[in-house]
Length: 509
Ligand code: ATP
Image 1 (cartoon, rainbow, N blue to C red):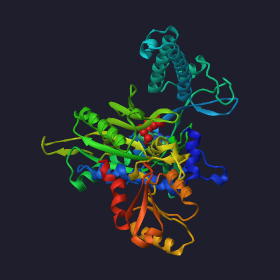
Image 2: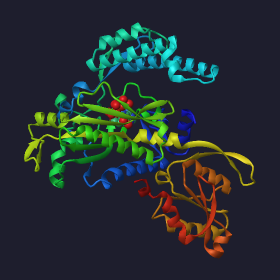
Image 3: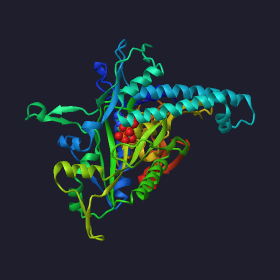
Image 4: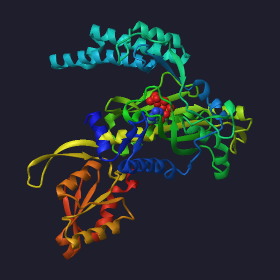
């Protein structure tokens, strides 16, 4: 399904709405509707269970969004959490300079892909790798992309705004909106949202909405370690909102100004970080695969240009409808954060190692994933249109959301065959009452049964349970499986274990 269809499906079926829609919306902010909040909560539960419940040495935390402003000085966010901003003087549109250059590279890449596709059609035993290495025009373009990527990476690491401007001019990049090449200088734009404390006037009272949840973990490192008496290696996991004043906020819930993160900081002995880096890379990739994300839609992207706090970093990228993009980051953060907080606060943030009999600042391995990006990955992967036989055996199409049953918003729908027969609706409501403590169920009596099935398919409900006249005689119902479309007659007594078997999350671990 294309991206537009996914977005409209999200609205039509109560997954996601534009924030403040009646006022024409607030850009890059979204609200999760009745089905959206269920799916989102299930994703969070899957992450939390896999981190906190499954690991004896990982504990949870829920720290405040508002933190002392010095936190963000120590973490480097006040000075370095910037994006390069450039305005087009004619269209008055604002862009990220690095994104303009990346889009320019993507255009060249597009030309290469066209050449490859053409050649593919022309030759029988086509060897793409060889073609890319030997075709003059393709090679020239690839060299150009590589050179631009290198120069862009350097300008970004050095914070060289003049060179970014020079590149935009050299490559003759035009405003995508107006075609104008009349650009302002490139300047740094800090992505943190600031606000004011109620009881302090002026700049003294300036505080920030957290741009990441990680710092709440770092400043609580000793509180958690001492109160739980954990020994290294151990981790602290947290799920919570983060805020970034993104310059280019597009692609739906992929890049928002208010979003949610699931972060885990794993505290380790210095020198062991590469071992743990590999461990968490594998563990996190397997977590994605276990929920049903196909191998070919996931890949690692190792960072060449490392952030100021990292000595190794990789992204787990997912193939979104607009290409492979970052879904999760895995970073070896060294002792940068704990040391900075120690220096600025004057409070020791050290661990006493009873084996070595010495104090040291631990190193940190971080895994950080956006809840919303995970939501988009699951939804875009699961949403399908397929041809199925209808009740009369003719072919018809259905839209089905093939989410893993354990994260589906509704686990089973309870449907009386017809609505105006009181014995049936009563029996159906009894079944609903029996199951509602164990599962999120939905009772639906409106429209023909086929249409009700289709509605449940579209929100990914794994089971539809139909109550008919036979039910009144022998306490059996039909249970329809979303994926196989098989209908089975089973006793009401067996329903709970049947639904549980397929929707229980523990099968994922
Ligand atoms: P990007 O390069 O896409 O801006 P990032 O490298 O700045 O992302 P991190 O700082 O590593 O992202 O944040 C960790 C995770 O938080 C990301 O992998 C992503 O899933 C999520 N995330 C970051 N920014 C946003 C955003 N604006 N909207 C939604 N999710 C986000």
